[in-house]
Length: 292
Image: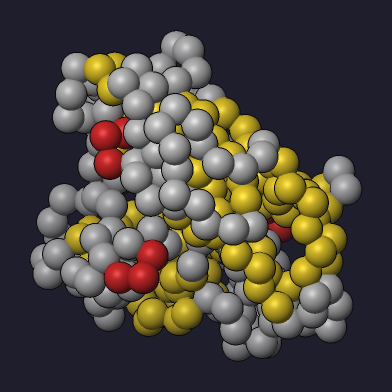
């Protein structure tokens, strides 16, 4: 078998445990969530599962405003890193170019890594053409992290995600909210919230809207589902309102905004609502993986 590059997907696939951010100016510091306006470094764990060396493998790193689908031309290139991978080897690869998350989104961004290696058994285009759809489920060399950590006591402003239609055609999709599930312990550690446990019951309410609203206490704005038509070469902002109630300290609730075309899952953006500051969270509100 020739070289075969792998950056592992998560469950769902846009929660990769093989991508992480180190906020601050020390790339060897502890991983955590990106902070708006503060430098951060990106890492990717890349494996060669083939039986031929992949020396000179290049890993390209990108960021994008939170959106379920990321494409070349919407995602912003950060920089590249290089690695020599023997057969069966795994290596943590650092992008030496720092990334500064933008203030406008409060640091809530999606990140993505793409590995290009010589002799890969299933290579992807290099360079990637404009409008190319990053499709992690179809390519082992691509992984996405679309997950933002939100403190339950700080949910006060709507967050924004984008539905993109880049290329020759528009698209018609459905956005829907899904709740619950567990996060891979490696992802929790990469986000700096190691040791949190999932809440046994649902403690977060949410709504989707095409307009930003100031949330009312006890009532998140929006609907659980939206039907959208997006014209070609356009992006439509969608606002996600979240409200936590009685989320106990040390617990988290996972909320997904998933994008589908018919029965096909196109991707998603996820929010990890956590309570690390108080014994019990009575109520709060917010709106928005990313990536992803």
